Every structure is written in structure tokens, then in C-alpha cells.
Image (cartoon, rainbow, N blue to C red; front, side, top):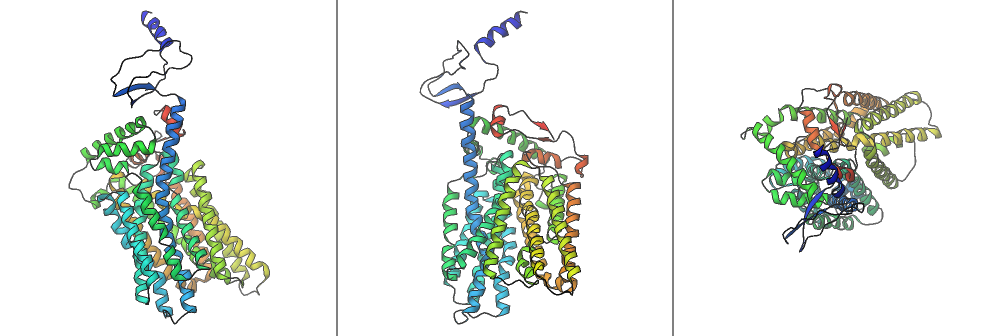
Length: 544
């Protein structure tokens, strides 16, 4: 009874739920809730003071942290938009060179090399990006990627021969390859779980904006002028990336604990929250080092259960995604619609196609905030498959029939519906690479997977005309539809839910014995609270 009475007396003076943090100051100050009539103040050295944090302090800290995370992501997005511009530049360059054959004469063969060399160079950059991201750091690798991009555009603007143009295109593709993996990994490692849903999909919006920008500039500017203008984004990106911190996880793994705490404090807005995350990462890092041999190479690490499962999911997903026509339909959308006798300006059609892609990517990033990943992929796979099958059946029914005015409307509507639903499948590989791979191999594995994806995409894109000639367009879309349904079944079986999960929780899931999602450990947790609530009660999590 005496203890209970003492606790009751104590609660009159000191609130039960009170958070403290240490801040610099010349003298001690004490804050108490308005309801308290007395305060328990302790004398402190002049160099430090202890104060309570009220709700306004939490709000300010969380707002500051969210703003800083968004600003850090925007720096990466500037570079992503700059790397998106070379993807669409061939659609601007080749028509202008063909109409003015005296300046830089091109043939059909050289034109195809100008268009495709970008895709050939991207895997080379992707293979190099992994070791660079682990050795130099994510931030420095992003800075390195801006250098060949800047020189590539400058070389393009001054080119007077086909060889110079091809070399310039190679440099731009090489830069795009270096950016892909480290950019996704940096955003995944710096964003909070609830904010990561929005930010990790943003690079695809930036890529699409870069394509739309270069298409728009190419409608009224000469190709050399477009190349000079394209240098603006890499220059701005380098300045912005200089101002953002390195990934705290990379800093901690490489023995820079003080810099890691400083970087995470900037990204979270509060030293208390940052210190708690650092302590958790240190604990996991120590456990990882105790169980991992120092002489294990990347191949042995990838054969471990925690790495093998996400590798299997990402590789199979990427292959099914390609066979579902995600990028092929984008590449050949205008040609497909033109088969139905449509008469339109190809440059305007390219701009509208890019605009639709930007809008769909932006909507998808917003959806990521409130809808679970698995549900998004299931709906996207089913929707993509249905529209592909509908278009295939329509083409089969209309085969050999005279063209009618409604043909273009049906074909265009099916393609538009396909692009809307398929946008999620286009964006998800980058998100999966940033979220699923374990921290110890995330940088190197991301680069290798991006390289493999680009090589496979290049082969598939090159072989598409032959596939089209053999199966006809209706057969091609039948393959796309069947692949979309197979992808849906695969993701339903194997893909874990990652929305609201920390990267550590995801890594723990893959370290379990289960392969199928239905057999997961029911203790797999998700964070459903907003960042403000998490800061007030870090231990409050909900079961999946």
C-alpha cells in the first residue's frame, strides 16, 4: 500500500508518458504540462539541458524530417529525369537527321545503332554501379553517374559524325545504368517505412518526365540545342546531391557511426528517433557479422536463404513482366495503333503517350501510400491481362474485315487501359530491388539485377518484330495476356507484403523457413501508424 501511495503522489507531479531529449543550451529550462501544478527540476551542467517534448515539438520534428527526406529524394529525381531524357532522345534525333541528310548522313542501319546503343550501354553501367555503391557510397555513386551524362550530352551537341553520336549515346546509356540501382537503394535506405511507399516509386515519374520533356523540346528546337538544354538537369542534380547526406546505413556499415547519426538526424528531424534507429541497426549489424564469414564473396552470400528468396522473386517477376509486354507496348504503341488505319502526327502522339505515362506513374505513387503492394500487383496483373485478351479477341474477330471507324477507338481504348493497369508492373521491379534485398548485398545485387533486366529487355525488344511476324499482333497480345495472369498467380504465391514494413522486418521475413506467403510467420509485423505517432510511441506496431 505504501508503494501505491508513493506512485500516486509521484504521478501528481510528473506525467506518466513523458519523453526527454538532450539539447545544447546555456542554462536549464523545465517544461511541464499545464495541468501540473508543480515541476520536478534538476540542475544540469550549462553545456546540456534536459527538457520534455510536447506534441508541438513532435510535430515540428516530424515535419522537418519528412521535408528533409523529400528534399533528399528530389535531388535523386533531378538526376533520374536527366537520365530519362536520353531514352526518348532518339525519337527527336533520327527524324531531324533524316530530313537533313547533309549535316550527318545516316542510313537505316546506322539509325538503328543510334537508337539501340543506349540500351547496350545501360547494363555495363548497371554492373559497375553495385561495386561503386558499396565502395564509394550511394551518394558519391550518384555524383559519378552525372559525369558521363554531362559529357554525353555535350559530345552529342558537338557531334559531326555518326560515330560521335553513337559514342555520345553510349555515354548517356552508361550513366543511366550507373544511376538505376544506387538511386533506388538510396531512397529505400533513407525513407521511413510509411513515407517510402511514395518516395521509392518517384524515380519512375522522373524518368517519364524526362522523356516527356525531351519530346516537347524536340518539337520546336534543333537537336543540338536540345542536347545543350539537356545538360541543365545533370548540373542541377550535382549541386543538389552535394547538399544531401550519405545513406546512414552505408555509413554505419563502413564504420562512420557519428556521420551516420548526423545524417539520420537530418533525415528524421529528431536526434532521439535517429539514435534509436542507429542502435537497432548496430544490433542487427553485430548479429550479422557474427554469423557471416569475412571471406564470403557475393556469390556465396547470394546463395544464402535471406538473399536467394528475393532474388528468385525479382528475377521471375521481371521475366514475366517483359513477356506481359510492359515495355514492348510502350515502344510500339504508335505502330500498333497505326495498324488500324489511324492518321495522326507521330510527334504529337509520342508526346501524348509520354504524358499518359507520367500521369499514370504519379497516380500510382499516390496509390502506394494507401494500398498494399500485393493488392496493387494483383489488380494490375488481372487488369493488364483482361485488356490484352480483349484486344487479342477483337483483332481475331476483325481479321480480314474492312477497316471501320470504331476500330481505332477500340484498339486505342484497350491500349490505354493496358497502360493504366500495367504502370504498376513497370514500376514494381525498382521498388522490389530497393525493399527486398538484404542490406549486406543490396548495393551489388541491385546493380547486377538491373544489368540483367536491361540485357533481357534489349534481346526481347530486338526479337519482337520477328515474334510479331510469326504470331501476328493478335497472337502477341494473347501471349501478353497469358503472361499477365501467370505473373498475378506467381506474385500471389510468393510476394510478401512490404507496405509499412521496415527493411529489417522484410529481411527477417526472408530469413525464415517459408517460401510461400501463405505460410508466413504471423508475427511478421507492419507499421500502420503515421510518422508522428511512431515518434511518440516507437514500440507500437500491429500484426500483419
